[in-house]
Image (cartoon, rainbow, N blue to C red; front, side, top):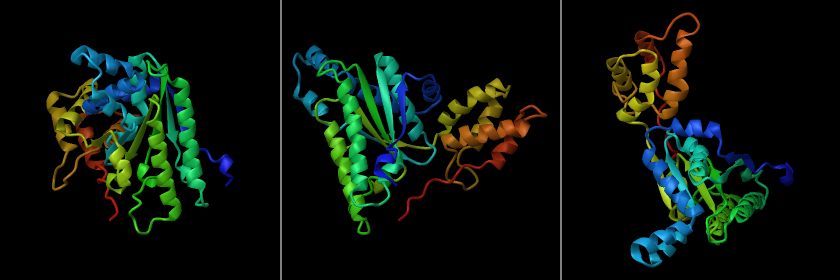
Length: 309
């Protein structure tokens, strides 16, 4: 494959975006992560607001402000499959753009950036990707003041690109690629650029220690607990006429039970259970509580991801 023809970005999306807004609003149980991400983005894209806060409350720009600004703009989303990592990474930019009244661009890195294994190819592709993101961030830079726009680089399945260099069997080309990834993250930290890097992984322990040390925050995504499953299912089931007792029964049934130590993930609920409920009734009968119990029985949750040892 010609290096010039390799697509390094799977998607480039601009915010605000109504589809992203809808998906973002549907992510229940992640409120503390949403709040932290919005605050982090606000401070990255409007750095003078941090100085203003320090001056207002401490009568000077404190040294703490510089420590904060010197962090690499890297955030790791870690957790089981189907817990909302990628969905949040793909959509939180819409909330940022709307709150800050600014344009935000998401660059979703393609796994094609691993290349074909040719010597130097992975390093070249990753360097090119970070170079394009940095150029976009420079164009958006407000030169120390509030930035006019911002960029987010999303690296999904990050363990495929950033595996620990401590692995004895790791190929030299992969080690060089991890080095390029680290340099790219560090480079975005220089110059007060309006850029964020989000890495999603269900194998956080497999990430290179240098990557993990650079993360400003590592968010850990869990399967929804009973309250979160209730918040997710209740609006849908209430609209269908289910009673509170029936809803509670189904919420309980989607948790750990009968010796199974895990409940449903968000994707199990949204992509398997609820569509399965619709398909079980369509086209000849209504959705009833009895039918819903059958669907739950026939659509067990996916097992948790087990990292290779």
